[in-house]
Image 1: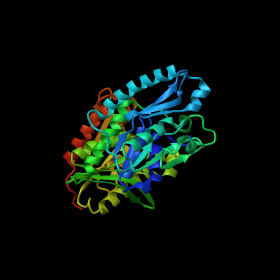
Image 2 (image 1 turned 120 degrees about the vertical axis):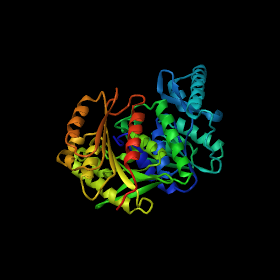
Image 3 (image 1 turned 60 degrees about the vertical axis):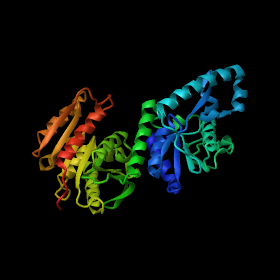
Image 4 (image 1 turned 180 degrees about the vertical axis):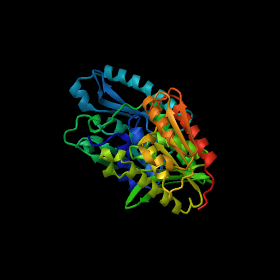
Length: 433
């Protein structure tokens, strides 16, 4: 395994492509699996995101094996070697292509609606997928970008076979790949989590990227930052809507708040309400590999306290109230840090958290605290009730009916966002330091 999931792959690929920042870049993700990777890359480069609609032409008896690919604007790429080895005839090829063209048109309508594709003429285009196998879809994507007038095409993937440069046949001006293993059989073998990506996730990535670009263009500040927390430097993203009334720092149990889809969803809801957000990595990449660090509440709380000090020294944040939003073990870290006299957060919200892990620190918390738990998350709900009994500050426990631990059910994460928004806006006034 080379990558935990597509988000980690996107983070590492975005770091490799840092040299493209500021070069009028458009990031095109290949649906569906390439889009979550591309979304993280686009965010890292402060670039717009769009899909490059291509469809693999799978061998009838082996649909995972590509004998070619089709794309928008009539682009068609055929892998003659695969056709020869599998013995697929013209009739079967035509039948598969006709079906995939129908799927392509439906996907275009679903992903973009009535919106036109992002203009790429005269710009640098980064074509991103979660990996390359035969290379047919990647070649088709590059040809689409070329047909639309791209000045330069960079094909960027986390993993590919050793001979992938030969397979691409010069369709890209530049190839970027993080790993080319010898024992390559399928892209999924190099991911810990290679869960199939649904259409809903693709459209969500596109909506989030569009909103980020809108914020960036309307006087809001939205930038990658390096957060100083004691002796370490942690990567993060600071978003400050114009006239922000406060800033909420996110603490996530897995360490990587910056790329947590759920935290980003909540953060965007807070941004729309005029609240700034700091999504940052509580742990370094090396620290994340040791699972025990996720449960080292003192360590996580110390990082959050350090980030609070860093925030207060940022010129654009000076005088703004600071709040904490914690999830899972990050909720315990938020409450632990809130008990420190030096942090003085204005409010704390816990989503599906483990506040009980803050233990003896709970009675020392003075910030108004909201605990949000899923009604179907029975064990965690019980632990939250035990923790609430130890809080001496203003507090409330909200149960979201039918929600499980990750709030994956329709409408449940939206409810979390509403509750957090209202709690923070009610309790966060300009700080008096």
